[in-house]
Image (cartoon, rainbow, N blue to C red; front, side, top):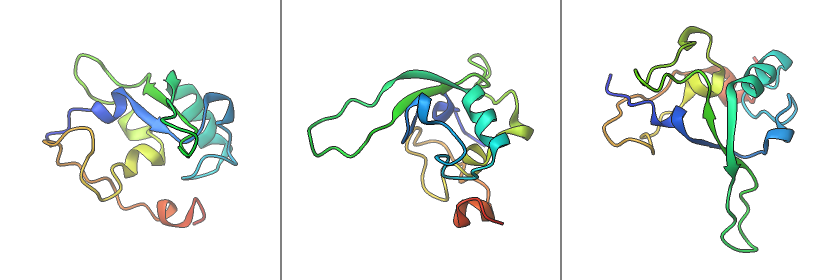
Length: 114
């Protein structure tokens, strides 16, 4: 694997820190998952709107479990679904050398319903 972990260093979520709750978490919706993610993320700043029509209303975050020296996840086996599934079967937008495609997770397709 050639993943640099840049997606963990700085990532966008379509919600601000005070909006992180089970009903807003788009992957699972469970309280445990929401609590894990709320504890995991460190707010870096709100998304800068480019104009009045810009629909992005979230923020940028970093992950407290991302090891800055090794660029590996310190809780890899326990990471939430949004991390397991990233980059959701697409090419990584953070690192062109990354060959990670994410895990196939049924909950990602069903919005958290098994």
